[in-house]
Length: 213
Image (cartoon, rainbow, N blue to C red):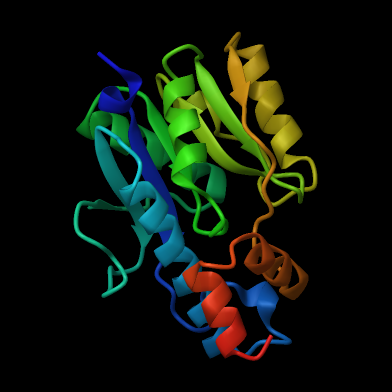
């Protein structure tokens, strides 16, 4: 069976509510503008996942789904307090729903493409894990052939060396890892401008332009 028929793709995201998302964009953006950018990034991410062959498409959501959610996604609630707990729980819940490889991304890389996601899915046919590094020292994608909470729990998140520490955890577990190209997460206004330039046809770029940035 081909990897595209066995791997799930999951987005972990927050409901784009003003004051709860993209708070590092304020200032220069208002809380409402930051939420609009978050929703646009989420729409782009959902669109890329929708266009990628997968056994199942999931959204691990903190909050409630809105009109931005397209058909074809199963929604599961996030569990846990810290980010490492929420990531580990999302992998476990996805695997419980449908045992098999799981590819996970966040809502912060609207420039992600079906080609990159397809590479991640295919890599899990040959490797134990797939990893997408982010320019801020974290990671934008993590895929596991067989999810295990021990691979994530206790890894410091939102830290300059998060990515290195996560890779070390995978290496110490003896996993073979396929590394994807580095992408920029949207955390700051400078990040937003960079990412919009990389994805000029995206909802994100259009929203940033509408906000006059």
